Image 1: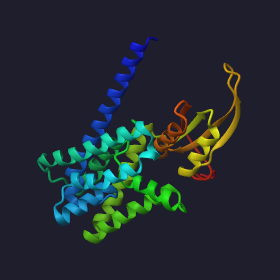
Image 2: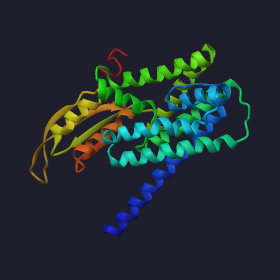
Image 3: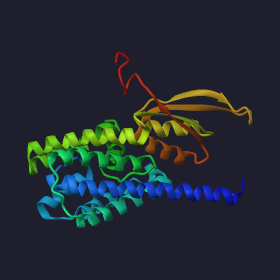
Amino acid sequence: MGAKVKKQIFTKKLLREYAEITLGVVLMSIAIQLFFVSHNLVTGGISGLGIIFYSIWQIPLGLTTLIFNVPLFLLSFKMMGIDIFIKSLYTMLIFALFLELATFIPNINPSIFLSVTIGSATVGLGTALIIRNNATSGGTVLIARLLEKVFGRFKITTWILMADMVVILTGMYVFSIINTLYAILCIFVFTKVADIASTGAQNSKAMYVFSNKSEEVAQAMLKHIDRGITSIPSKGVYTGEDRDLLLCVMSNKELIQAKGIVHEVDSKAFIVITSAHEVFGEGFKPLAE
């Protein structure tokens, strides 16, 4: 395959990825403005914080997103790797833009039922389009990564939960317990929709890494991702070289970070990612289920 053909394929792939990311951001922005803001549904994250600030001080959601996310992105640059960072930075910037553009859409005065179902499903679909193209819109995921790096102690999923709970509890204080209960239901709905839309109902991924720097890659992944890694002795048939094959099973959210870590340590690493239909054991479902 010639260099020109490869370049064309790469360009088409990149355009498709950015088109899907943009569509995902548009869907999320519309759903948040039409369904979540109208009922003060604080679902965690920076957007949830933005709803609180908008309700109290009329600060635009897009501005809140920029104020909190820009420093987080700058601090998290080394954790992502350049490719994911560029995509994520693009996602964050247009998310702030479209959150403001969505305010010009006429209010349809949706019921709380429509907001929880249609709104959450739309946010979930938008989130899936962003995730499966190796990007993130920032928020509490980045906060959790920074807290885990600085303080350690807890695994990153615990830090994410704590960061989101701070936002949700703040929303409960500002609004009401009923609003908070609806918001928690929204979180459950859009998380499930995002999982199904991004992986076809698969919740876990198995990553295989072939690298000449397998030890460095393994140590970097152990430092930032709270998952076990198996090192399997292997030999390349073509090269005749002995090297260790790394195997790690993780969640979809952890997958983006893992790819960034591998790329940062060894940009020439060979990675294979497969769906894990069912995973049992520590960190996943108990074997008895």
